[in-house]
Amino acid sequence: MGKKLEENGLFESSRMMLPEHRKQFVNRPKDAGRRKRPALDDQTLEQFALLLLESMEERSEVTVSVFDPDRDDTIRGRVVNIDFTLRRIKLSSETETVSVRFADIVNVMRV
Image 1: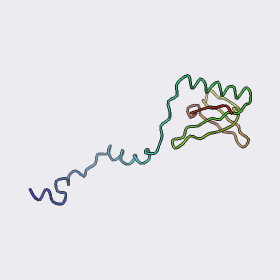
Image 2 (image 1 turned 45 degrees about the horizontal axis):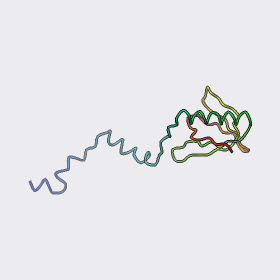
Image 3 (image 1 turned 90 degrees about the vertical axis):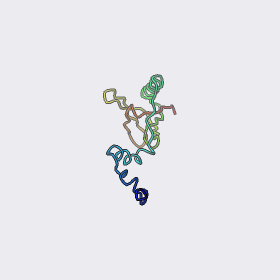
Image 4 (image 1 turned 180 degrees about the vertical axis):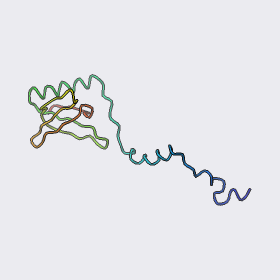
């Protein structure tokens, strides 16, 4: 009986790891610092759509916050095009034109 308790004898056979546990253990550091996409309600999405349409019609600038798992990026510019089939908008600033997916938009504000 004394031999089982020496040199980790009792737990020697517990070193086996299931493939599911190993996969979860390996993937954990990648997902640890990541944020999840916020769930937006219909009223908020409708407000975003109105601001984007207003920006396109009046050629006014808006600030769009775009979701990124690490941090939100902000893009400032005018809405040039809204493509409902591809579900994207094109924002044009003084230096560049950026295409943003509808699903990535977190916030829209007037400038």
